[in-house]
Image (cartoon, rainbow over all chains, first blue to last red; front, top):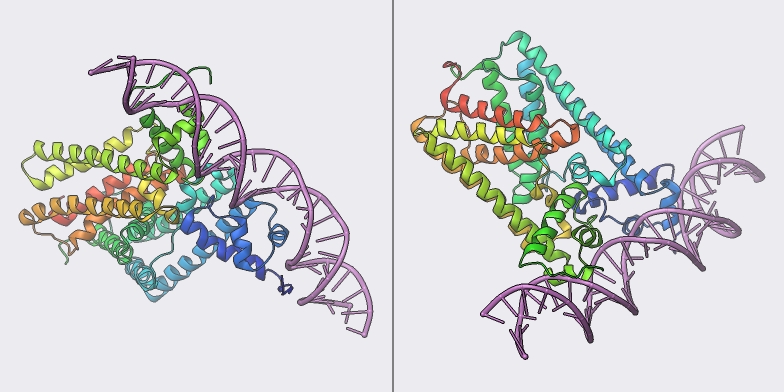
Length: 211
Length: 211
DNA sequence: GGCCAAGTGTACTTGTGGTACAGTTTTGCA
DNA sequence: TGCAAAACTGTACCACAAGTACACTTGGCC
């Protein structure tokens, strides 16, 4: 190596995580080699093992970072939407619209969901990572279930639905929408699915006769 | 090897494909080794390469088989439901219910969707495989779009929706539902999502006031 | 009794994960 | 300014799995 320059705290680790995330989303975890990561990050193999004990620790850090970021972004988005509006239903509908717009604004479409990626490589990971993944899904359910409880208190549902299932539906639709978008190479599919979900929520709590 | 017994035509190949499919759905394609497959199939490594030129050919055959089976199963299911009922809407609603029940009856939940698995390991595959995957998604869209055209002719939609997006929604929800089911380790999630979708279809074409 | 599908056996190359450890540079702080 | 700790580098290894190549063998069937 020509340049030998230690980075400020945490910088290199972040860079590795960033590179690893996109590689994992494109090829999967098993096919992402440490060697390609260190080459891209411009460090040596030893540098990698300075930051992570082994590849499994990378997997864990990667997912933890993803879940943390995800939660921060969507908490912010739905809180902002809620604060714009007194009514819980209309606040949530604004949130869903912002969500759809955010997905629409991604220049190359959504890069992929680590939870989904890990799900299809389950056996590669230890219990800690699998539990982390499960907790991520349940967190989404709880977040949206909270919205629906507040909404249902004011707007009795016009359709008989299980509110937990309705909360899971947004996770399923987002993960599925990402996949269909990626496979069909049409980035507009995901935001459209979010907007369809929004339409469903609207008819559940407001009915169809009000249109 | 102690036993040297050639199998009747196609038998061994099928066995490899069967073993490969479940292994790929559990660990991903890259992490599925040829060695473990041949060990499980009770043949030698050379035997594998007699049936498949390389690992890529296995990937292709695997996906092709999956898509063919998938199409046969769902064509049969929705055709049967349609023939039970004169009305296109009610026939389709019966089909969705059968679909949900089928998912509910799987003893260990849905084993996973190869399309989704391949999607998150995209860079591992050649163009043929990727095109095959995309064609699979478009086939689902066309199938359901056909249903909606027939339904909408008789029941003007009560909610403004894009029928192509509505057709994609079932693919997204199925793929997403599989993921959420697997990650949360709750096999009931997927059938519930299908039934929620069914409820959405019902309100779109019948409205909420008829309930 | 010969053909051919369906294999076996063996040897090889390459890539990857992981270990070990001594040395070097940079940063942050007092 | 000086020093300890952090953040690396370089080199040299090991074990093993993936994948390749190819000559050889077996058994069923017409």
